[in-house]
Amino acid sequence: MGATCRGDAVPTGADRRGVFAWMLFDWANQPFQTLIVTFVFAPWFVAEVVGDPARGQALWGAAAAIAGVCVAVLAPVLGAVADRTGARKPWVLAFSVPYLLGCVGLWLATPAMPDPTVVLVCYALAFIGSEFGQVFINAMLPSLAPRAEIGRISGSGWALGYLGGVVSLLIVLALLAPAPGSTLTLLGAPPILGLDPGQGEPARATGPFAAIWYVVFALPMFLWTPDAPGRPLRGAVRAGLADLRATIATARARRDLLLFLLASMVYRDALVGLFTFGGIYAAGVLGWGMFELGLFGIVAAGVGAAGAWIGGRADHAYGPRAVIVASIWALIGLCVLVVLTTRESVLLLPVPPGSRIPDLVFFAAGGLLGATSGALQAASRTLLVHQAEGVMQPGQAFGLFALSGKATAFLAPALIAAVTAATGSQRLGLSPVILLFLVGLVLLYGVKTTTEQHRGQAA
Image (cartoon, rainbow, N blue to C red):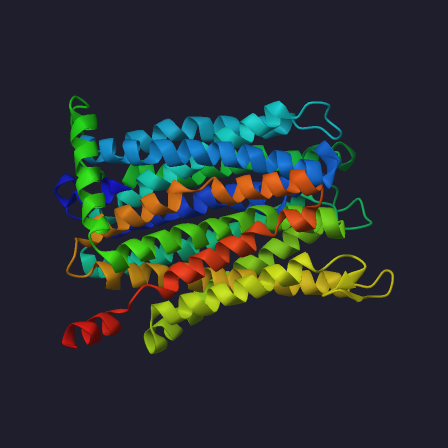
């Protein structure tokens, strides 16, 4: 948020233990995205709690959209206020409460639940807590080290988050989820604690598991990472909003920067929609269970780390916009492939009954999703630095980047929910993601690179 704009409000640096504890927060927060939002709980909720894939996708999308609106409305205000109050840990701690309550509450879900409203409310609470916790954690980044080291620290935290997702999925497959056609887990033992697969208890347990994981691995940040000195809340709202208005006014005066922020707002929202509903789609269309979805998540997260690394090299060779454009086109192709894949056909070509080709196609799509999303997000940060150079401080620029990323966080889930409800089709319900990627791509083509700007000035 705008919290990164006030460098005078932060300490001068952190020791290695404090930096690692900050990076570990990504590890602590990742199982919510991996286990609950994408690969395990959400698909199980749609398939087993609701029982109707199209209706379940619409309900889950509506809950995600409502939570996204709350984040979009409140994040700029609270971020600006946090800039003025200085300390960020109290904000992280405050939003940890709804996150933990929401995660634990997911245990209340049961198969064929007559009214799943309480589960959707718990999910929305956990989503809001997770998003706001990440906002204020990000605001601490400029205080950890000199400017030259911030990119390395940020990237290492990102990679650690990917790794946390892989490890949490491996634990679920080894201890909680029975293998297909078996009552035993990957280790050849029954699910721990006597969890009953017939009652969906392995999937339901991912909520409390994510909460326990968070408490254990977020604690080092509270203990060891330095924070800015706290200042009185009095007057902070008015002053913080004034800071936010000034930063937005600066961006509006720069056409290319504004266009890029708008483009990234749209294509990043499409990416969130794809991650949120990819697992739900696989469960409903291909009939995947918890075990297959776990493997799918491991493939996506593992290849994602490699994709970010390769994308960084391509960024250095060809520039960040070229990487972003190529990644978006690849993601559009991926969406078309996914929408045209069913148990009976791939790209409208029929496959034999019982064929594993659709499963292999989805696993390949998961790898491509991980690789392109990592490259896309890494190159987006680089292009932002290029666009903001000489215009505003890096902290201000990344504050706007965070704001634009949250402003329409509800858009993809709302569109997916609406189209799914209107058509009664999971496949058609995913199609708005393609439109959002195309809109982001059109806006991005209007953004001049630094070389093009210099060429225009010379002419």
